[in-house]
Image 1 (cartoon, rainbow, N blue to C red):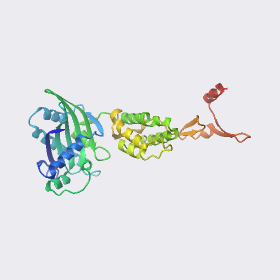
Image 2: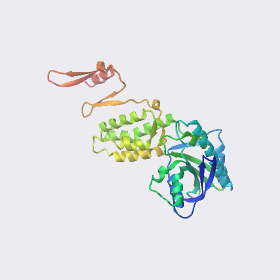
Image 3: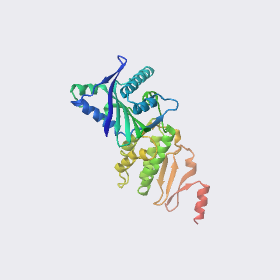
Image 4: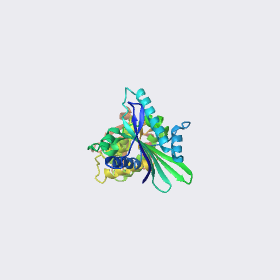
Length: 342
């Protein structure tokens, strides 16, 4: 990676202005900025976005930055836009949250002869001051000091360019709407319903179903815990799902390796068309929690847990005079199948 352009700008809410900060070639600050840039540029992002139809401000700024020479002025306009949008968000959500004080990093990086990245990030300004003064303290890892970031892939061939994949990262559990919607003029490429359905279907098909060959009991335990997670309200986070639900599971069959399941799950969003983080839409999933009872080595009874109070009238126990135990299931289709076995 070659950094072709980099600018640090303080977002000063107290004085209602933006201020360009020098990047000292010596001391801690240069290394701090480079560490931050590497962390952001290598980030695969949490959610992919596209520019909103009819909103041209940020799209125009980025196109002009790539095409024109007055890059400092364009980046300064972008920083002023961030200041305004943060002030508007703080006024709107004053009782809910406090916008973090920070510094905006803007960078343009060359990855290959034709592939580039635009990086816009907001990071911890107090950490920046410590680095500038040389009073480096042991604190959070560099990723935790980055509040929000935006990465856009750019392809340049001759005088033509194309801005393609755009992703964001937010250190908060849910992405701040003012950042991607108001400041960057973005909308999610996949809506929450599509994300929820795709995530569950792909996890079930590629992670869970293969477990059936080794252990049906483990499959149904993980299937039900996955379904509970996907049908609950809140944020879907592939890191949480992989590390807590899969990684925290204690298999009944020792041949099931949860570490391998976790690693496969973490890679899934990149190949299976769903975002790493999104707001779940429980109604998009129509599957039901199931109780699976092993009757014999080859036969299992699967019961959808939909709170049906009439199950006791459908399934009944039976014991013959010799002490053999059976179950009776009221079912015309099942009866026809069993009769056909005679």
